[in-house]
Length: 195
Image (cartoon, rainbow, N blue to C red; front, side, top):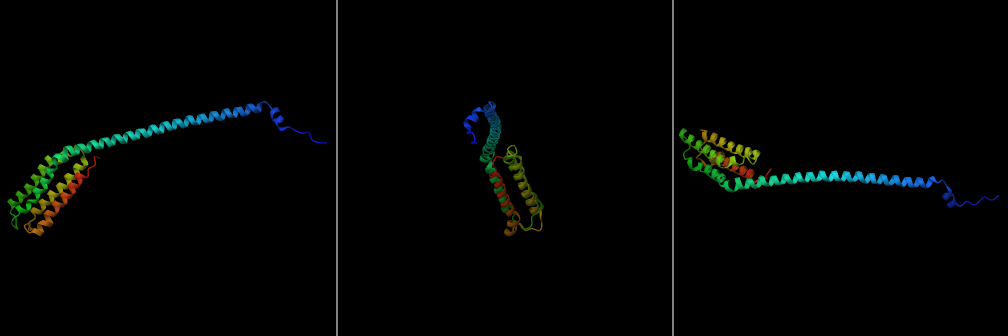
């Protein structure tokens, strides 16, 4: 007996009425899932973009503050006062002319030490103190460097064993310290970036 011929399209169309509704329901659920995913993705994108914007705004604000500090530093300290710094070091170089004998008497030592300390005091009032409100770290670095120089010069001048009128001794114990400090201080002053 031959098998009856089955029309597959007829079977699908005659299958339960629920099969069309199942596909429709599945499509509806898929649409809901896609919409939910899109919704949550848009919320995530919004919050991450907002966070980036806040970070960019903070960075921009910090950069503006840095630029303002740097400009203030240039206008208040560098432009009108850098000649005070040069004057200080030029005055210290005159020590060479003030040391005329191999053995300095106590009055000459006191006079030379007072000269160095007075020059530093003037520089503090006319230059260094103006750095403190701008940047305390830079102020301390420069102040410490200059204090170390004056301490070194004081000890050297007060040392009875050194013959400071000898050019080699003077260069090794006084001038080299002045030049080194000059270089360091000017490096500190001109490498400030507004931080």
